[in-house]
Length: 607
Image 1: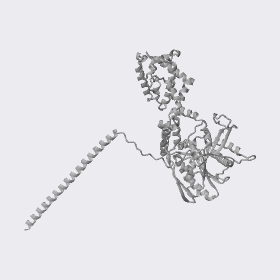
Image 2: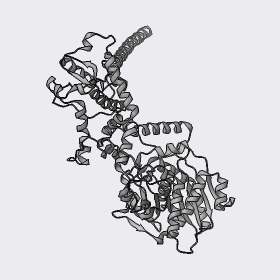
Image 3: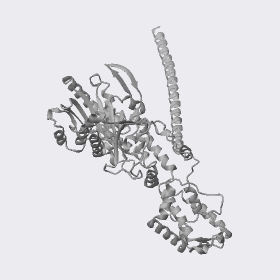
Image 4: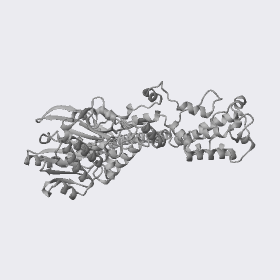
């Protein structure tokens, strides 16, 4: 009985083992199958991904329309500084030589300046208000602070303190070493005027010039505060480099000025700057006025750069005073006004004037005659691809001349050096009948001729003057106006004369439209801030108005100061002295003349 039970138990154990072993083997097989399937799918996906990547490499990458934001804080370490500086250089190149051709810079601007003349009289017209004796005290006040600004910018700090009669305990903040988007500034206590003066230096060092060159317009908004309550918000855009620099200055100036105002509640805060420093000062004033303790601070901006949009500039008329001298270029210079100037230069007739200069200049005329001599004695110069003189180059049918003229026109699209050897006649010459009527024997002839055509030396030189002008424009990458005509019997000289005639039937807007120059895509227009006072120097009525305003003001010149509307600074007015008039000594000289002019008999000024 016991043996029977034991055998049954052993059989049951064996059966149970077999069943369990079978199930486990089934489960292991299923897992192996799933793992194998997953591995196969993963391998297929990797192959497809590699194939797709290889296919995408052959395709051009789509352009990323996302714009990279300009920095909103000053760079801290060397890597950030190099990155911002590199981007600023690329931006400056793109907006200057990337758009302006060398021909427009070398000849177009000079010609347009000559055609434009002296436009200072425009600041005395329209809504301009002439100021008189009532502003003398204000001019004296401005002159004193301008001298302080000049001493801080140009002289050692010790000389600046001696000129302002400041002691060491009058200096609250001093940052004399400038960095990229971190300009030089100082905060001093002026007991004479009972003011805390914050002076900001202009663009003198390389780092400060790079700050000024970071001219992209970025969003900037001003919160208007009245007794600690927000009353309005002014939206707009401002100069990127100046906004970042103003934020960096505010980080150091706000705590120092807040503590100083608490100790001296009867003192005021004035922010002063020249050029780039004036633009930073005006933007910084908006920032400081958002603090309750500094809500009464004011700004004096000498020759400020165009740094903010219209709404922001208009909202600062009560606390920002801007002073502009004569033909100073900087207050009207912005990305939009520069694009407008380029459009005006492009549609002007500077190329025709250049052709006239080539014909009437002794050196350039010598170049013309040399080219004519080379073309007459070295025929293969006419064809850039020919290296051996053959008979076909000396005598060609009219059809070959036409093809060669077409080839020369195509060569203009290549590198500028390829334009010089291709000085061939781009228009077929007149027929034998017209050649006989023009009496070619009256002018010396050259060896460039064929059976039906005779070209005189005078015609060749005239053609060369136009081609040299084309060469100069071609070197700069500009497209020349197409002077091709349906009449094959017209000469090159006649076509040049036709291009010189002014198109009186077309307005400036129509010319801009024909040139396809759209300045509306350049971004928001920037203006100088606040209330604008412009010192204008005009010749006396009996003086010849064609004479240029000289570097020194003499008795024959009329000096006045006007409060001018802001729309005058949306346009660049070129003048020979537009750079010199921007410097602080010129401002001081004109201010001194106005102060002496408005002085009453026996009145002495205190500076």
